[in-house]
Length: 407
Image (cartoon, rainbow, N blue to C red; front, side, top):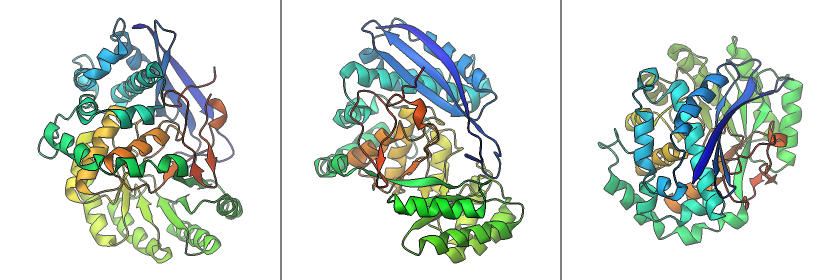
């Protein structure tokens, strides 16, 4: 039984240009952390990701949600968590502040993730193991499918899970092989060309076959030069992704993305405003066959549904510490499976939680095991930091979701 809930405002300045992009020049990586303490001595840890100021507001909202879980048994809670998620996300005291986005939805992510962590710890298994062992009915009971009825009903979700169950055992080979990663830290925005070249050579030496460069400069020539620099350094066999962090207007994006196509990017990420779904549709058509990767700043399943319906996204980057947590992440993954679009999460969690979720996506849903973003800057702050060897995430074995932070 959940006896107590607490929150914690945790902030980690990075320095030396790390984490910088076209919008965020000196980010402070921060977590709004929720702890759920039960009567058996287990503590569920969950968090949402922010970049500094306002993190305390997320903590305050998370405490409001978490307080309502006191006295509940985690097994009983998770047996019908979809309804709890629906009730919390439509809480009358908070809904005007959203709905389903912003501070209040980030707070819900923090609490939701703590629930899944506590559930896995109570059962003594890693989160990936808990998720792949759930029956289709048990899994769907943890989801809120409201506002998706035109594309994904409960029965359709169950059918997707049942259809993919047949190959699940064979796909468990990924647990031994490890899940491929990509290095997103080779080309932060404030890094010099020399630093980028050095990082690229290091990443290739460490076994990475995919990496990402930040673009979105005031002068497009800088982006083009640096993108070509990475391509020349890696050769043609390495996948290179370009991330503009929403910096361009649509006309700028059409022009600059067209110029960047010459270095054969694997995707171009967040080229313009994340709410401009039709703008992304226009851009996707203009630069085909180059694909867009979208989702770092998409806050909920309904907007993801619209992106999928318009065909704008070649890759979906849903982030479980940006949407309403693990529950909504799985819901979006089901939508993507229906539409045949790969899920390659953005890792505001530094890959700690998502290393579990991509294993579930591959094994239970049949998503292709493409790769998972890897950002190393906060590894020293986790009790069980991700283990990446030769560019591959090693499968976590400890109980829970790997989100416990050192105090």
